[in-house]
Image (cartoon, rainbow, N blue to C red; front, side, top):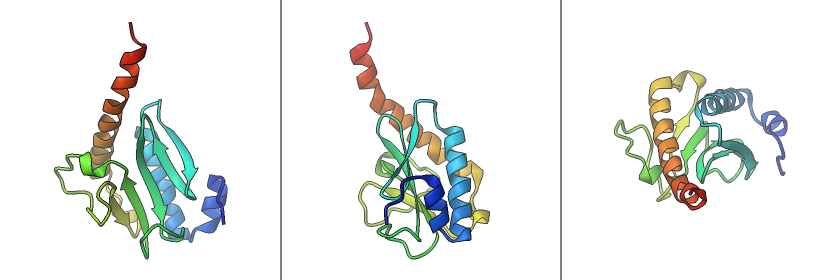
Length: 135
């Protein structure tokens, strides 16, 4: 099944996962810079700016590699300082993640800290492009 928009995504999720996805999406969108966008890719929400920043993968969507909960993955997690040890380093060498089983597990401070690290990294990717067009 191909998911084309958020309404279709939400319809396909159990209530617990739908709530977690919704809270994460709004939190991320509220804190991303204006140049960043969201798109549905591989049937899940992806957030990108100069490059991919993060993705939200509910376990109800096939091929996410998790059995339960909702995965919040950072595309360049391997490059983030993550001093607080917030992210799990799984078998993927690049994407590091956090899996949420309930909405109550979402903690604003560590989530904001890691998101800000990912945004700073994404902004560093854009400097090369911006420098080309500047005079």
